[in-house]
Amino acid sequence: MRLKFTCSALMACFPFLFASAQNTALTFNGTNTSVTTSSYIVPTSGDFTVEFWYTMSSLGSGLEEFVSQGQAGGAFYIGTDGINGNFRAGDNWLGTGVAVPLNQWTHVALVNQGGTATLYINGVPLGSTTGYSINTGGTTFTVGTQYGGLNEYTTATMDQLKIWSVALTAAQVKNEMYGTDNSAAVGLIADYQMNDGSGTTMSNGTSTTGLNGTLNNSPSWVYSPVQGGNNALNFDGATTTVVAPSSTAFELSSGTVEAEINPTTWPSISSTPVNMAIAAYRNFSGAAYSFHVSSVGVGFWNGTGFVQWDYAGANATNGVAYTIPLGSWTQLSFVADGTNTTLYVNGTNVGYFSQSFGTATNLTFDIGVTENSLPAEWFDGSIDEVRVWNTQQTPAQISQYMGKTLTGTETGLNALY
Image (cartoon, rainbow, N blue to C red; front, side, top):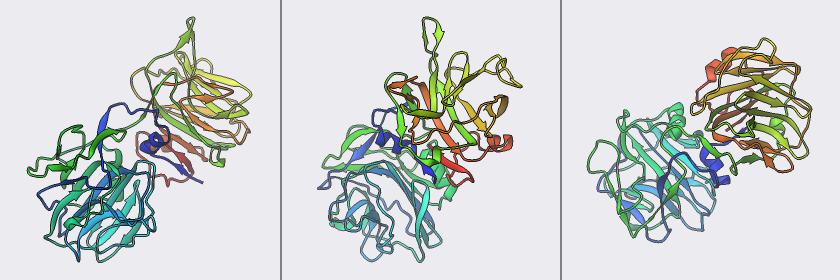
């Protein structure tokens, strides 16, 4: 079983977690709000990609469109069918069979390459069709409603809308979900970050002029957790947590747990260093593993014993001195073989302890906190790329995947946050 969540999905589940920087999105009322442009932005010949983020609470019984362009017979649009709860992707692909996720931020990308259209949801290709094309003329590119005055207004909140004159690859779709925005990217026609925050204009961020959108009937500017650029979850050291339900995906006799951390402060009580939790399979009934960091080292608790790779490298077998700085990123990999657990810091082996994962089951998987009788050991700073493997990652694999965005299909990868 693989568990895979994007940053935005986590924020939808845990709205008290805030992104490192604020930005905005547009909310449509499903009745009369939309954004119109004066251009046919989606290419009507050749390859193209249209991508955006959305969230919506329900589908209703009618048709709704996120974006549209053209006229009957070969119009382009991406919307929902209301009845079956599936996406529609234009007159030439009405029945995608791809379900519409609700109540969470979701990334959608429609890629047309040589007449084969593929629909990606959260970076995963879930449907395709051949013989895909769109027509010319009719209604110019529109957001929030259907072409030609057919209404079909959406109730969605939308962000990060981009139109390309190229067919993005699967890897590029994945990277674009959270990739750093680049107005000069090859093939990027229009880039609507929706960060205007007020007013009646949805600004285009590329150098192509005349593509700005005009807001009609006041769709609302609202806060959005979706950001262009690299993303992480920021924890305040006092109240913010991520807690995932119990799963056998987290129950390991051997394997690897990884995380990238960027601590803000080192807490202490009466000058005594206090551990901050990174990730843990642990709750009030027990613990299989929990990993910690403090001003003096990195720690590991398996339900019966606590060990610490101190920064001097003195405690662990074959220990090597290392540091974890405040205010910058460090990658940690805990590799357990059933007897010993080795810590890698930014790919470097800093020693091992004769202690492996515990056997407790039916626990919660916690990020940035340990769930005991009460939440404790709050993390102060940012955490990213938490991974749980049922395999012992080799030094070469740790180095290969370090700093990379994974697909979620890597061998042995049970959970990816």
